[in-house]
Image (cartoon, rainbow, N blue to C red; front, side):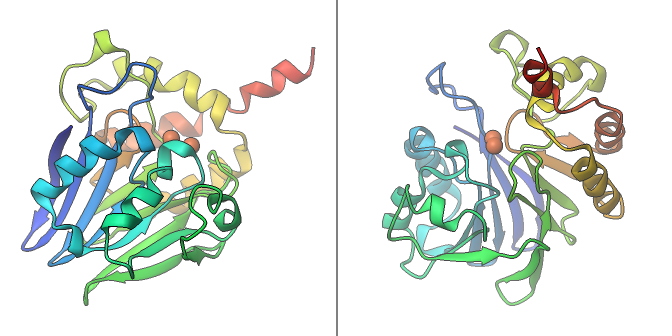
Amino acid sequence: MKCETLFRSGDHRWLVFGQDPDRPANVIDTNQYVICNGANAMMLDPGGLEVFPPMMASLTHEVALEEIRAIFLSHQDPDIGSSLPLWRRICPPDVKIYLSTLWSGFLSHFDRGAQFTTIPDEGMEVLLGSDLRLRFIPAHYLHSSGNFNVYDPAARILFSGDLGAALIPESARTGTMFVTDFNAHIPFMDGFHRRWMGSTRARDAWLAAVSKLDIDILAPQHGLLFQGDDVKRFLDWLAGLDIGSGVAAMQR
Ligand SMILES: [Fe+2]
Ligand SMILES: [Fe+2]
């Protein structure tokens, strides 16, 4: 599995893991992120059961398992955190697991021994190490009804979960982790956003909140990352998109 450093300032780092060449073709590709502040690390959406072996192998090149203090789950999907019981076996026993208050009883179906620190609907701020403040920003209904992003104001990175996600066919992969041609990238995210994102009110509220943030990199859980001017291009594109396309199938 590939690993790239997205940000580094002293011992504050952001790492992305993904584009595993050995991934079975029927398992959707995911990006896993790790934020490090000194000897304290937080994993963001550690992934499904199927990516656990390559993810652990790549991660341990960069971060010692005993440094993993927290695991953040943006929502309930299996590609987000069905690996949770495996991570809990190898991470420190007091690792914090952050998750929407809506989903803790449901994720216990993956891992009945997990103790969740639940995130209230309005979000919350947490400390990683003694001095890195991270914000869990609500992104409800985009697509999950209890859903959060992670913003790091020092790194100016927004982990956006399934917002910004793209399904890139094998033939279009260039090996880069970043969008390099926004217009050429649109077809890979268009159908996903139209069908999976259901609420225009939620979309507009999210855009209003996120447009106040300084964002150098917008980092989704699938597909390529957006940086620089492509961040605004993505937000503008999403603002004009006709979402909730599944409703049409109910009106026949
Ligand atoms: Fe999802
Ligand atoms: Fe996803």
